[in-house]
Amino acid sequence: MMPTLFLAPERLWLLLGLLPLVAVAIWAVRRRRRALVRFTGMDLLDEVAPRRPTWQRWVVTALFLTGIGVSTASLAQPARTEEVSDTIRGRIVVLMDTSLSMEATDVDPSRLAAAKDEATDFVDEVDAGVEVGLVSFNGRVTRDVGLTTDHDQVTAAIDALDLGESTAVGEGLRAAIDELSTTDDAFPGAIVLLSDGETTVGIDPQVAADEAAEAGIPVFTIAFGTESGQILDPLSGQIVPVPVAEGELQAIAETTGATFTAAGSSEGLSAAYDQISGQLEELIGEPEIVEVEITWQWVAAALVLLVLAWLGSQWWLRGVM
Image 1 (tube, rainbow, N blue to C red):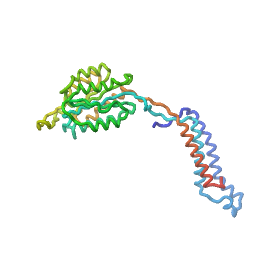
Image 2: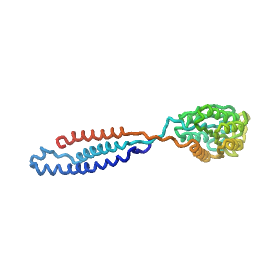
Image 3: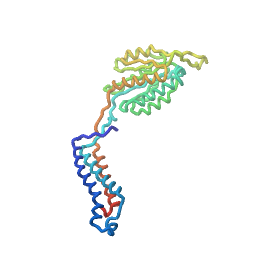
């Protein structure tokens, strides 16, 4: 919710009319006791006007004047600004590598665990008016979550990702392109691809990159990991080096007119996602802002204040006002 504004602010000048009322109210409260003492015998004063705490009269007066003030301000048509949440402004597919090399612990606690955490933060920060989908790949491709504005569903799917053998970057990229191509072309779409290795199965990723470029879909790529990465081969039981490979990912980004980032740590990955977020905001544009009039809420508040003032006068000041 955004700060309150007024659609007819010139009518706020009417609030100046409250100044005489304030002055009269203060004069009346202070004059009352003096008048009673002057015109009533002291022996009858407590019967005619029993003493009540002064603060009660001030509270009733303040409630009454505030109610009048709020009702007067409502004539200026108070409103609030808010984002249009039911309009889709853009679409992003998060494409994540879940090959066995992502098990490497050269990034604490592991490449996959760090990638999950940072991807989750990235999705959490995406504007509500942007649909997000998730595609993961190892030797096979999985459409984990279709494009949706339910970002919690996407982050839950990211957290549930698991590893598998081989790396099919090209196949994963093609699946992400297909996910965006099935939607209305009037909305911009982009792909954010994170991987640590080169393709071992499936189509050449450059072929998929050319398809993305032809469709006008930028593919922002992140090479995640370091040269010292290594994993335990589940078949041979031997330690296998898995250095990060940047070549394919850099070529994909260049082909599609997007940016490539190399990240060798969780902090570097966070910075990469922040950079991509800024670029995506420029691509998608600002959310649509509308003005929603809330005059009825102000009128309702004024009525509550006036009713409270009346109840206070009856309960506290019965026979006094």
